[in-house]
Every structure is written in structure tokens, then in C-alpha cells.
Amino acid sequence: MSHPNIVSTSTKDRVFDAVKLTGYRINRAARNLRTQRAHSILVLLPDLANPFFSNILEGISRYLSSKGYSMLIASTNQVHTSGELLVDYLDDARADGMIILDGGLDAEVVKSLEKASKAKFILFACEWIEGANFPSVRSENEEGTRKAVKHLHSLGHRKVGHVTGPKNNVLAQARKDAFICELKTLKLELKSQWIISGDFSLAAGCIAAQAWIALDDRPTAVFCASDQLALGFIAELSRHDYNVPYHVSVMGFDDIDFSEQYIPSLTSIRQDRLFLGETAASMLMQRIESPDKDIHDHTAILPVSLVIRESTAPPNLEKC
Figure 1 (spheres, rainbow, N blue to C red):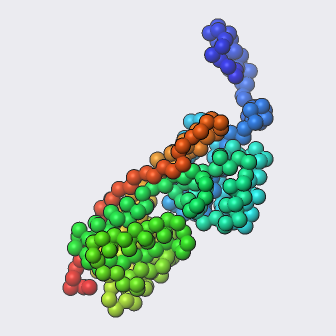
Figure 2: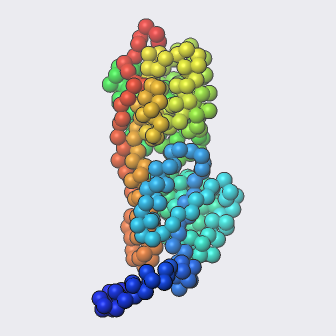
Figure 3: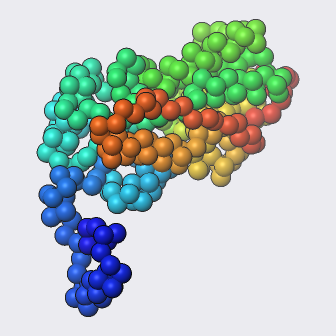
């Protein structure tokens, strides 16, 4: 029944009784053809195996489900060289909108998206494209980094290092810039060798730990640009008989589920990833449901919080 509000109660009751009796189910394909909507949203991830995205996807799925929409998931690795593949999802009515969680798309792909006839139904979440005219939802990356450095400073650390995310990644750059800025604000020393390159992965965290071990003058605390980096960092230190936080304090960014269960449990900057996903889906659905409405929700920046656990403690100066 397409418009139950314009028929009498008795008529609605008879229709619903007939539905129950016959086992009638909505033909979604026919409905989509009639409404010219796919009732689905495409979500693009840079890494399908990364547990960081799980809560974001849950938030997106939860909100879309409440609106009668489904979620399609794909990897941006398949489309890094061709924006046409993405545009086709919208033009061929396979999806009504798109949420992209990868700020590292090639420039040509971004140009194709900006020129798409349904560009207003594309939104970036978590990451974003500098200079691109797309709405986005993100966390307070700079403020989260400042909280991390201030926490380590409050414990007494004056030699603080940083393991970065991948080169040219917008999140990694935002966190690195904020890290350097906060060190200057607190008048802390920064040596170039205390900034170690990474790529958000466990493996990169292990390699960064090896670099820390090789230093003659080691920082007493290390802020990692992601929890996976921090967990890999701690694991590699353990293999070489270094103890966290006895020999070095380590903290991450994201507060993924495994961080609380790790040994030692990880101090981290918590992003409310479930809320981030729900917010992204809500912003996109507003545009889909009111395509002619002038919506000014171009950027939503969500707060973060410091979660203190066992991996950070005052420096053991005798071991530095």
C-alpha cells in the first residue's frame, strides 16, 4: 500500500489481512523502477581488512536500514585509475549515493566525481580531499593529537617521538602537523629521527619499533598515528625484551576494539566511529531525500576523547 494515510481504517485492515493470507511481499525491483531509486548506498574503503572501518560501517548500515536502504561495499583499489567506474554506479542506478572513506584517490578520479551529474550525492567520511567540493564528516584529528601530546607531557615526558601514517595521506599529515605544532607550544625538543614513517599498519609499527631500538638517543614516549601502528610497535618491542611502558610509553589514535584487550592495554585517542558512520549516512540521506533543497552541511567535525590505559606511564629515567 503506497499511501496508507489516504484510505480508511477498514480498507487498510482488509488489505493487511490479504497480505498475510497470500504471503505477498514487495517486489523491490519493481519499486525501484517506479521510484527511480536503487535504495542502496555504495561505501568505498581503502582497505577491506582494516578493523578500523568496522564500526563506521556498522553506523552507516544502521542508519540506512532505518530508512529502508541497503549498503554496498567496494575497495577503492579497484577504481584508483578510473573515476568512470564510480560514476557508473550512480548513473546506472545501482546506487543512489556514495560514501568514500579514502582521501587518497587519484586526481583524475576526483575530477570525474566532481563532474558527475549526481556529484551532490557523494560524501567523504573520516578522510577527505583537500580542495575538492564534497561534503565530509571527520573527527578532530588535530585536537586529538594535541590531547595525546599533552597527556604524555603531563606524565613527565620531555622526549616524545611520532610514528606517522602513510605519506600523502590527509589524516597522517593532519596528525603529524598537529604533533609538531604542539611540541613547539610545549617547548619540547624535536629531533628529525624521532619522527618515524609508517602506514597505519601493524607491520609498519613493527618496523618503527626497530627504528626506535636502533636510536642512540631514544624518545621516552611515542605517539603513533593509529592503533594498529601502536600495537605493532609494542609487539616488536616485546620480541626484543623491551617493556611498555617501563622502557617507553606508547599510545595510538582511533581506540579500535582490540586496544582495550591488548597487553598492555593501549592508551589512545577515541573516535566515535559508530556515530561518525551514522552522521555520514544521515547527511547523505538528507541530500537524497531533498535533492532540490539547499543544504549547508558541507563539513561536520566530530569530537574525540583521550582514553588512558596501561601503555603510558611516567618516564623511567634510569632506562632512557
